[in-house]
Length: 121
Image (cartoon, rainbow, N blue to C red; front, side, top):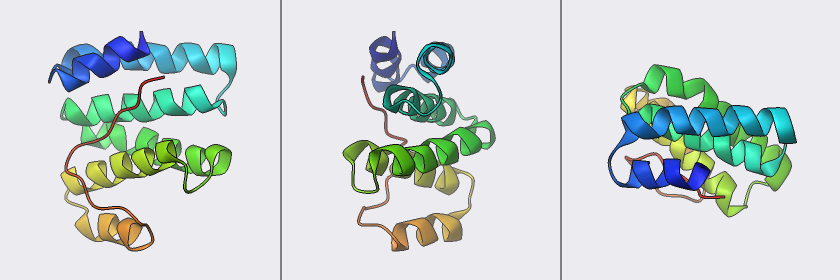
């Protein structure tokens, strides 16, 4: 189901992807726990779906939480942590909070992206 949600996002159908991404995240929380790597990936994908649906205010908290959890569980340099950070930065940019986004990027080795990133798992 997660891969289908990601596919829908890639097909520019975020409104269809959003409820699927949320369901995957909620199920993984229940079955695997909040700090399981797959659950963290699902939270980041859910944040990306919200943002791509134009719901950036709603996306901010899950994007921030996914990045923080990924740093803690997977490590700062893990590819999925970097993608979670890019999603968080993209949400900040879409909210017009460019100085915050620049601050996050200043402390990172990644380039800004205008599009939240998704991961398949």
